[in-house]
Length: 120
Image 1 (spheres, rainbow, N blue to C red):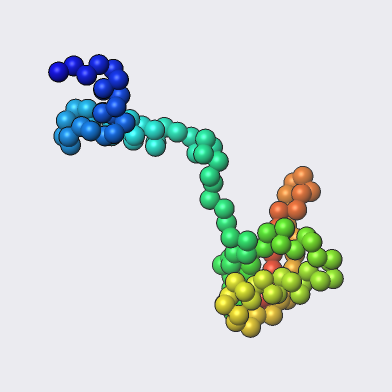
Image 2: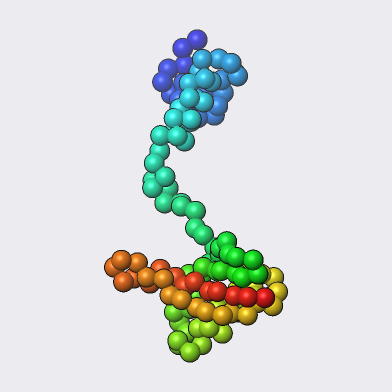
């Protein structure tokens, strides 16, 4: 009746225990322990925001956060035009006029993104 360590390991890997047995409960407990005890950094799979995200704004106005990589490759005089194109693509082509484009800097003077202000 004793399968030895190899047989037990084989049954564990192939999930060969019937539901409700103590072995089944141990396997489920180990899986749950792995899920909840593993730090998120272990998988390096953090949620990433959209490249262009709409932010809450006053009535009629629109505020959009644009990641810096989307506009950095353009010369400063073309950034407004490209930002307006990105905002329109985010809003399903609705006509929005870009009023202002402001860079966002952190305390270390590193560019974190752009804030685009639009109106209908």
